Length: 116
Image (cartoon, rainbow, N blue to C red; front, side, top):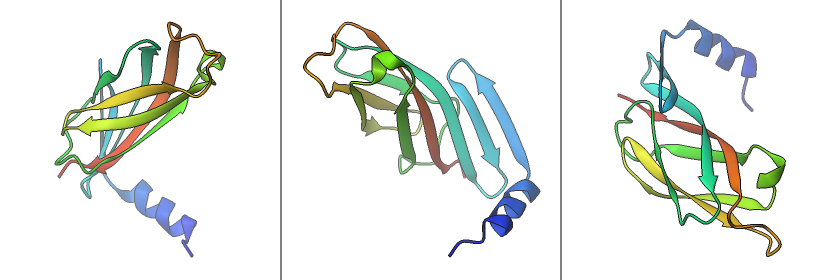
């Protein structure tokens, strides 16, 4: 079992650098971990969106989580494709045939990996 109190205490004690730019926000931790977050928009008829990250990761082994943001996104499922150190492709897939493929949709995006 994880001891959450110890984990949060360690996180609070780490030095951090926060970087915000047009590609979102990155929180860099002194142990080499980095968490990036941003809001992602897509028009449903696009095959994919290239999502640029606010800071580069050391490699492309980071993890991506995309969650729908608004009601018009409820029939949308996101999947991740090609990843580089500074961007990845987000593929919006409609889960319902009644969804309108031209509507704009939004997702919250969290990316976790290493910067050093």
